[in-house]
Length: 125
Image 1 (spheres, rainbow, N blue to C red):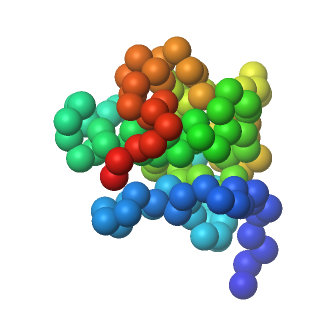
Image 2 (cartoon, helix red, strand yellow):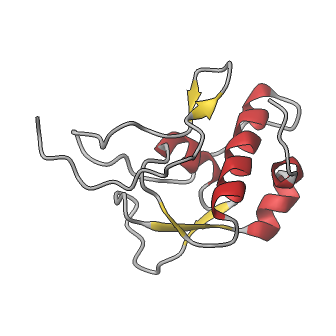
């Protein structure tokens, strides 16, 4: 097996959205290289299944990390990329989009505006 890069596993973070097959975390580092984070345009509008999945992921991020910076670690790149540059932003000026150690943070103002339901105590799936 190839030498995989170090990757923080966020213990207690939900693995995905129940009943959808959508993952929020990855099991192991990608042997072909770290999938880069990049802002992906969202087509999902409020009321759609895709919006609910993004909201559920943001809910998990908020209730796990709050306002604190967090390491990308084993968080799914596709899920993060749908929020990246808006609700989730890079902390460091020399941000490396291909690093599992990159520090991210929730942009609370934007996140609350776009996904107010993510800040409720309980998120109904």
